[in-house]
Amino acid sequence: MSTLPPDDDDEGDAPALPPGMRNYMTPAGHARLRAELHALMRVERPKVVEIVSWAAGNGDRSENGDYLYGKKRLREIDRRARFLGKRLEIAAVVDPAAQPNRGQVFFGATVTYATERDEERTVTILGVDEADITRGEVSLHSPIARALLRARVGDAVRMQTPRGWEEVEIVAIAYPQG
Image (tube, rainbow, N blue to C red; front, side):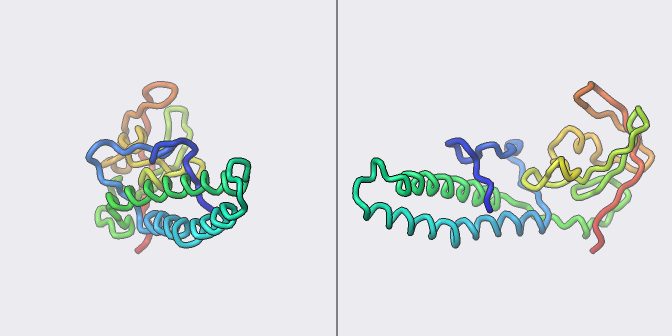
């Protein structure tokens, strides 16, 4: 199942990349985007084209729900496919398991930090297209990731939060095993 943007531009609600930046992603994130593009173009689009073709042969297209919905769906599929193609084109696949400097926070790191209120939080720094805050994943370009990058265990860093500036201490850094 795909997640198509609801509006008419190519990016929809997708997060923007800073100008000139590569689209860093893990091998798993890259594979998910490629799989979604493949499913759209090789499975879903041909089915919709078949329905639109059948519906067009039924006569009056102005009141034909299958035809009208199918054409709209084709536009959504094509828009999402263009977006995925552009994102994959600028992708820089980085395997966090191959990170040699595991004592410092870089792309793909899972970081546990303590807040000023003595709460521990854990986040994984991933690419903009694969980060999901509900799973504890943050984008490489997010304020939290920018604050944590290059820090080491025991370092205190300042980060911008909804409550304002907060100092946090790095408690642990982990990378996937290779």
